[in-house]
Image 1 (tube, rainbow, N blue to C red):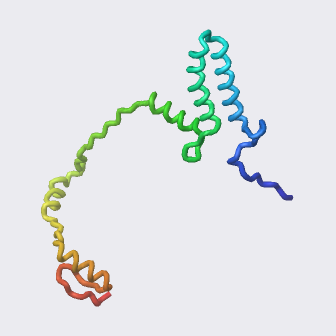
Image 2 (cartoon, rainbow, N blue to C red):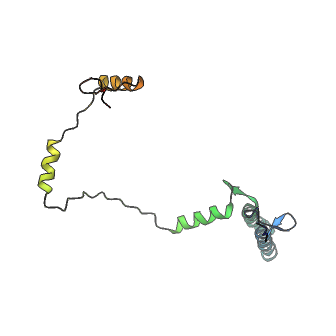
Image 3 (tube, rainbow, N blue to C red):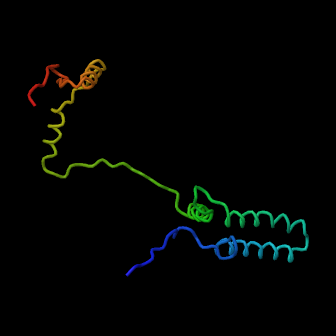
Length: 146
């Protein structure tokens, strides 16, 4: 039995001519708000001034994409950012060993010393690695036993 696998599931269907359902609803809602403002505000110049941002926002919702994502995602993220908490505190706390051997651990730390490499030793070591020699960086002896 053969089943047909749907393809292009990320692309929305064009229902109203070249518009998807979301685009049509954004444009219809914006057009309705613009018409209502134009009819109910007696001063037409004031209504036009209020209509321009609404029409721009409506067009951005319907057609504008930011990083190949719809503009509504950016509006939603901005809304959550402005209403969310913005105070982030980080306090570094020193972790203390819980074991009974903490004084022994401190003594062992004081006894362990990591040698620091000077710049010339570091250059010698990188040169030896470049030519694939196995040199001990401290004694500068070859390590033939592998």
